[in-house]
Image (cartoon, rainbow, N blue to C red; front, side):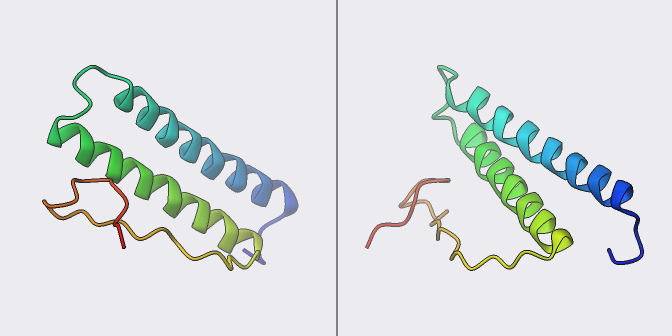
Length: 88
């Protein structure tokens, strides 16, 4: 992103943040539904969370900020259920 102007970088960052916020809003909307336990909804939540995390990483990369946090490991197998954190 070195070849972009400050205005272009700001617009890019704002667009990425908007996409991240939209994905997280959709996650909350799905999670509060009465039928949120359906496998299709759980899969959608997991995909949207991954999208939000990916856009955050893209934004960090574009701004040159190093991400020193370890990502949360999720077990999407049938025994854990989609989107639930893996236990010890």
